Length: 311
Picture (cartoon, rainbow, N blue to C red):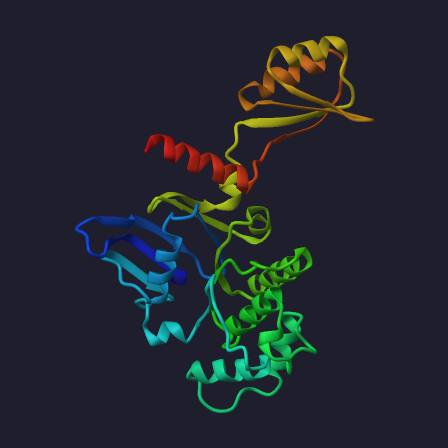
């Protein structure tokens, strides 16, 4: 089994307020792993510690305690940096450069040496839908176009690991879909993506793993399917529902939704066998029974709310 792409083990980071003795814990004993080839959503409300975590991951900050590994190396190690593509949330490019000039500059900064591979810039700009604008000054780009160029910059060195902080920020719905499609393609190519975003329905479409932090503490980490499949309700679909059947279902707290050719009932999973037998006895045929999966947004809001109540 290959080593994880990202490892955080008992990581703590405390900031000292300037001109004050007050100390603020940004991260407290945070541990999680991201396997190679996974798309991991790194989530948390504002001030949760996401930026601090990403800064430690990239080697911009040092943890006060704990251990961090990136592709098997310590953060900031040149051997790790060679394989990482990074897009920060707030970035700025030289406005007097064109997209082609900027990507040539960033190619030089990769330290790979030698001239850029023929056609690489053209292929990247096609990927992010900026073909035809490669000779336009960046100062004339829209916010969404600059965001696309940022994604192209992150892909420049064909990295194994992409660390993306709000990569769809500033994009219209079509642009966001194109970026998500691109991330799905990278996933199919075996790339690892560590993705921070507040647009949870979009993240849910592509991520394998979720890491949620709040107030510097790990709230939950795990495979998305397992986290969303841990609900306590089931959905039962029947071909019809008599008045007696409806009364039985309502008495047990079921939510009932009548369609043209079938009826959908949602109720507590603990009652699934009892409900199935009772409804069948009223003369209806059961078409399907499935666990109800929540959404990532519902999971996030519940976990953060529960954690804050405990705090």
